[in-house]
Structures are given as C-alpha cells and as structure tokens.
Image (cartoon, rainbow, N blue to C red; front, side):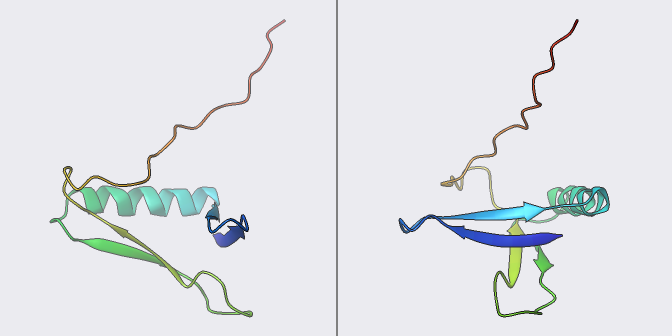
Length: 84
C-alpha cells in the first residue's frame, strides 16, 4: 500500500491510496469487522515511517448514520469498451 498527498496549491489536498489485491482483501475484512463493531470503533493503516515524511496514518472509524459528513464515496467507473 502506498499513500501520498497531492497539494492543489489552493488549500485543498488529495489523498492518493494505491492498493494491491492483497491490500484490498485486508481492507474489506477490516471494514466488515468494523461494521459489526460498536460506534466509535476504528482501525488504522500505518506508515513504515521511512523517508522524509508524509502521511503517518489513516484512521477509519465507525460513526452513527446521522453523523453526516463532508465526503462521499463515488462508485468505481469502468473504462468503456466497444463491442464489435
């Protein structure tokens, strides 16, 4: 897993996360376990802390459905394929 920040130079940043298939399996398992947990449960994705700095951790937490939020999850879009 690789995590990096992209600075838009506008005060806004993008968090870029690159996953292997094995990372996706671990993440899905962790999310499923989190879904079964009590509110305020959480898990972390942590850096190896090598290099000159960057993203140290990602914390994923369970909140109540009425908590709201400023982010949304956009569904994966597959590239269009033209059939013969």
